[in-house]
Amino acid sequence: MPLTHIVVLALIQGITEFLPVSSSAHLILPSQLLGWEDQGLHFDVAVHIGTLLAVIFYYLSDLVKIGTYTIESVVKRRNTPASRVGWYIVIATIPAGLCGLFFESYVSSVARSMELIAYTTIGFGLLLGLASYCNRKLCWRTIVSIQGERPDSLRRMTLQQAVIIGFAQALALIPGTSRSGITLTAGLFLGLRPEAAARFSFLLSIPIILASGLLEGIKLLDSPAGADPIEMLMGAVIAFVTAICVIHLFMKYISKSGMGIFVLYRLVLGGFLLYMVYA
Image 1: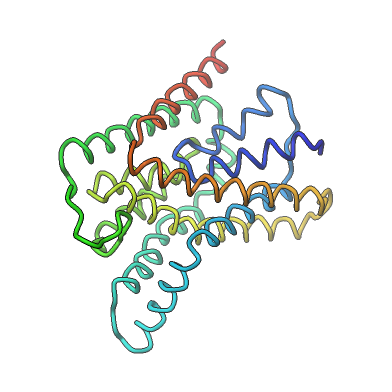
Image 2: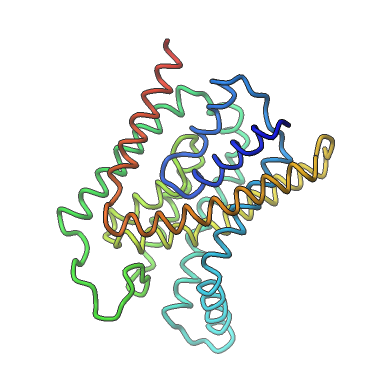
């Protein structure tokens, strides 16, 4: 694969994996606009590993704390806010896991058309805008933070909220939806602060990306031909660095500016894809 392809595709994966803009809508652009050949399963696995390591690295201290207290809650039967978040992540992962298990092959073969991706990019973008408006303007969340509590705190999150976000995440199986976008949308509708909704979305992405990477890795073992270790390493490193920067900048941005720019971008991108379909 040419170096340009490696860099561009890894950057796309690193940027779009955690922004609410739909990675599938972007990954079809190089082939449609530039006529690039499919990058291959081995490269997909590599960049997924890169983004997975990025979110683990960024939230490593949180993950250690959540994991420790979740295990302790089983051993000592003692619940804490951190252990509750751990169980919420487990519970919220189940709907997407089951839907992926039963419907992923159908979606992969039937639903990956540019027209569908264009409409879902626009439709779920508008839904994200509505959720952001309701969250900010209609006071569905507590405006005044508890003194000393982080803006992205999940201490006040409920099991019901986690379950609903989990079912929302299952919709990300539909191309163009955006996993981070739909989980953020659900969190905002449920009254979570934007920072808290984003943090839970990122933590929730870890088991899903891990499961996806493992499934793709198993397929790769059956057909390892074409795997280039240098290409895979480069793609993983670029996706890793890019994703860390994106997560950090995104968290800082939404604390002040909300989701408006991402909604607008999705509308423009969806409109462009429709132009390509019908032109």
